[in-house]
Image 1 (spheres, rainbow over the protein chains, first blue to last red):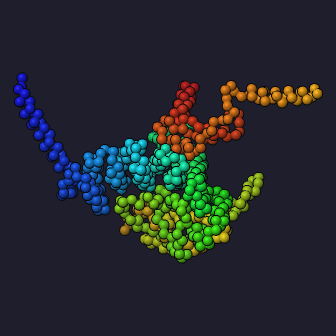
Image 2: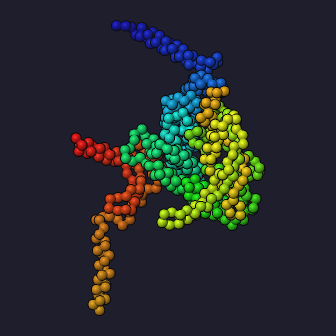
Image 3: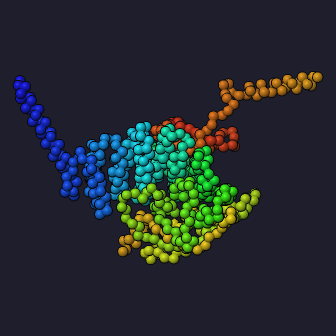
Length: 449
Length: 91
């Protein structure tokens, strides 16, 4: 039998060995390209690592960037706790890097971890939860917009579900009449619009239900028309709810109500319900006139071409007017969602490759009041408002493929009708500069260079 | 006088007869079917099997479409049952 002193000696030896191993392990964890060592217990270091990661991403060294971000995450967990919100920027960068690398298993892993972290925060810290939900929502949208990703629809639905959970959390905390709900509800409306652009494609029917879970529910997948009808109905309901939220609040005013009416009218137009859209545009115009809004403001509201749906919820007033001869500058969001502009929250901190392809076009906007004769009755006038006489003035690079792509994508844009003196008016000679996304299918042109 | 009495009996009797047509314990107000937005909000917060799906269906014996909501779990079970029945009848 060993003496007690031997045991103590043995324990001390084991402890010193363990310390030595842990120190050695900590030293090997230093990123390969970084010459400076870091200390897990110095909170400042994680920001330095994130900055280093950004530099690495800019120079295309993704693996090195991922290592730096991973190290920074460990430091944050050690210094701020496993459930700390300080992880958000690092997680955002890590997920964006996975998207840039097209590493879908890693992307799913980071998104699942982000979801888990948010789930832990929800009941206690609503503000932190909401800021995290906003970041995660944008990450889902980025994943959905990547044309190389085979699960675009799945990420789009995940973004929508996250928005709904945020709305539920806000309703529980701030009440169902809080004005803070409005931008979140509008984001859900926008996600439904993005969803319809996918649903309208051939061969994509019923994806919306199937993609919510890995299990396909037999016999209960929605048809294309049902899915479109559902998106329209949800969007309409949510926009009406936003209108009621404002009408019942201290922020109620004629201009706020008109602004929301315009969004509802836009929604009707986007779903081909031109006649009700036209009536709503006129109502919005009339309510502003009744509120004695001056003519210049009315022109700012109604006399400049605006692409719909509006990218973010603004209830405070009209978009600042542009000079009449100004060129409209549009940056397309993704090849997955043609004719859709990039959501404002997606301009993240990841330096993505700049789009190299663009085109400048000229077009007219005209309204069509078409009287259609159906088989048994005369249908009411169908109002529509759209592009005519579209011509491409110039393109970069100068290639017919770019011009053809520009024509087809610009033709999918939808504009809010111009109203002058409460009458829908045509607009002519609008100049538009259209910048394609980096992932638009011009690979053959890139290869030819 | 007799006519008046008969009318009075009819007036009193008709509501009683109509009330008898209702199922026992049934309320006259039908439960409100949730809207699409309410369903979507609910589905975002529950496990996949607990989600509900709503759609317009034309019930047997009627031409009037009705909005029906069902649990995904129940839909799956019904589908499995029907597949099983079909398989049995074919073999």
